[in-house]
Image (tube, rainbow, N blue to C red; front, side, top):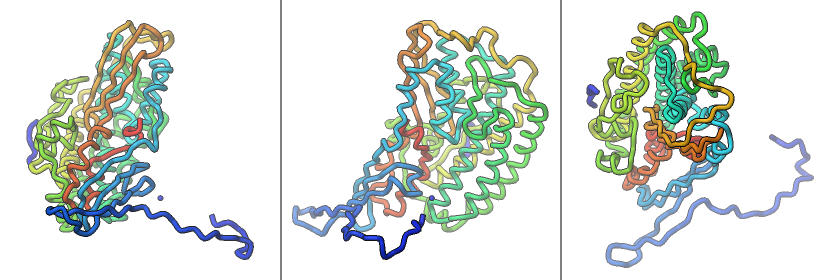
Length: 406
């Protein structure tokens, strides 16, 4: 690893219950297997993993074809949670869509809000006051801590560690959700950003509380790493597993920690310098091998960089307004045109593409969700791997189904 710069019993009498004799349909299919000489050579097994299974992180299914324990084919199956987000947004006012963005990646409300607000601001030509820019960076980096901490906990649970890591992760997550609740009134669906700024200013004492949480986070990360990083089971299950090459990652438009785990130095905070990220000193961690272990380590290292960014933001945040005085709440009608706003979300590039025809609603509204895009290489990561590694590979991608089935 390189750290670079940049889850009712009915109260009936059993004698009254008639149980029909039903032969359950298997959730697998046996396929003929053909040897290299064209002759039959045993059988392949097609297994449906999910959709209702903890390891699939929600209503997501994988059709996996196995040769013994080895994966020879894998097909992701989406659509069980489709919420019609984009079409709803085209029939809702621009501001009315902000709460819907919370439900895309429901672990990362604040960054969802920011990406959408950024796109509308480009469309309408709005400027964000300096204090609001600092608040956006603070809430975004706190969100990155929430996401990556939960990812590590979930990944270890996928490996079979069914208690301590996830509970440690959720312990720290709750502290940050307390901050979000005191700021926005909600722990997860914050609906906090507004076009040209933020909905409300920081309440009294909020910065001091946030600073205390962040000051303690480095100690938590030290504790977390001591528990996990050199654990022989974690190392054996992750190193050399689910390898993704840099060339394939780039060709498939993979972004975020998955891309950087392949050694590709690409972070939109550095490339686009949106908001005021150019004022902050932080590095971009990179991986060597593009395997599950690198994807795990990238998240840990990124959390340490987020702590650095947060400490700088706490130090430098100025007083002042938190919204562009030209921004309208009622009668908001951006001029005709199109815009694409993107950010470095915790899972990768999150973008919103909007077309305005001058009406109160977007003419076209399109989301570029990192969870969906990053899933496209899942088969490539799993081919030739053991079936037990499929769950770990999926866990290391870091998906949320609200964003996949948007």
